[in-house]
Length: 268
Image (cartoon, rainbow, N blue to C red; front, side, top):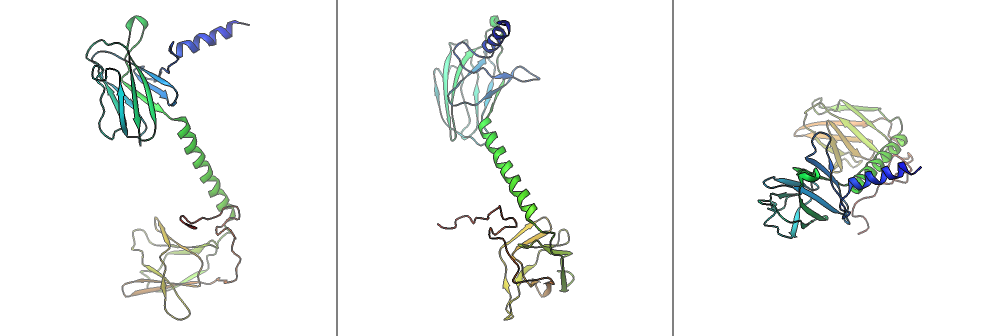
């Protein structure tokens, strides 16, 4: 009954230093390429050797703002301003030293050691950091976005495609529809998107500024009886043959009653 426990203890001892510092894991293809898991309360051990250039790679959007330690010059510690990498290149056998690196996002603590062949140690060429907390946060955001998309898709009706067009064939969209909240106009590939106006009963069209363009599809917020497209002297009109000014609208201002649209800056 004690053998499995002892095996686990031995494995744990091999994965860490006697001091409790984290020893980066070896890559699958080359043991000189290492991977460390970021922990603000953990010290990471770096093994190198005389003449070997070791690179420590931090997160892509990090910039080093401060760096200090023991015998920094002897260990050949260097970096480029506003970069996310630290370089080591000791010119002689040195005693162990510590190194502290501060970036615009995190703080790091390193234990610099010369690799001992007698202990089977090798110098690290590159050490990459992994950030599990950041990855989990990204996954949570992606999961939430996907859930919102599913809710919106579930709330979107089959759609109204009863649209007709009159006027310039060069401006006319090849397809028009709405989902009860937004009007969509699909134009020919690489065609110039015309200015879009809302026709009023007074006869003075008001230009619509709140539009989004994705590929060849223009999204116009809201449902209107008539849209006027204009480019130079060319004009085309798009008619919503199923327009109903009294049609119910979700109180959430989206196609789903479970997803609410919030305007950035509202209420400030």
